[in-house]
Image 1 (cartoon, helix red, strand yellow):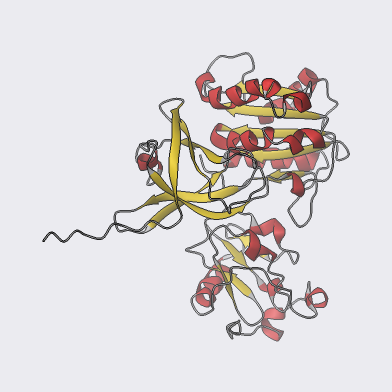
Image 2: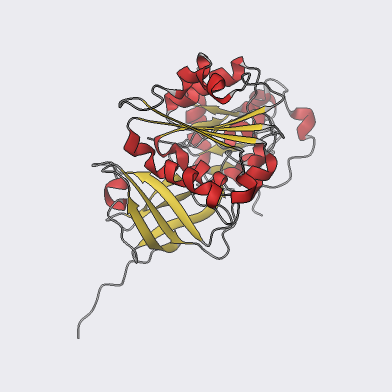
Length: 264
Length: 112
């Protein structure tokens, strides 16, 4: 009689339903959503895979799909020798990943006071929480203008975000709400494009405000969400504070919020 | 890197941090919480949520002693995974200086 080794038990397993490879270093994927999982658009969860020793290897990932979506979407880098992403990049539909059902985060509409303009400022895969918020009707009901400022090294790294932004006006659920409220400001730092350079420089010298016909940030009208590398987060926080904006939290909504769990 | 709980949590224990921690790395003493430095993933969500402003990044000056303090007690106290009512008189104790010397209890939280 054959004695089989017991199958490894994977707690909080979810099934992969789709995988899209955007570049050599970027991919997105969708997984089944636990029925009991409720989250606010913009939050993150811990996801991962089992290690050789049977213990889970987890990292914080922003949920890129909106809170009404039947599945969950994630957007990730691929790091050749990254402990998790070296393996995660190989997942295919039908595979299982671990998803801890405790969504949290500060990039949520609740952590901001009511305002007129919402700025979503990000680098690289930092577009993910905004991919969620942009597809949530509440975002469009709450603001007169929504500005997506995404900085990447090259144009092809902007593709995932650009596709979501491009699809918004035709979206059957929110297209009408989006109307003319959406402004997209993509910039590249290592490749020629229509708008080049770091977004922080465009804010500092006012180029982005000129391009959008806005006076500049004010605590009365502008709300800022930041999700990017450490340098971007620091730069934008300093710029926010220089404009008289203060950092909000779930328990104390104010003018800007920053996702610190982001790692690029 | 890790975040740590510092002395202004003592005798307040608001526990707002507990409900936002994605990895449940808070541990509960009789009148203070600590973070397990090896379990914290540096997500930073808890820091602005603390009504007593007691949570700090370990990169801030003077944080080293708090990392060791948090490590020591996180290994002695039980994990706390759900927020609860603050301690009686928390608002009065918030901001009082020197609480580590005058009010801190090394005892673990009473079993629920």
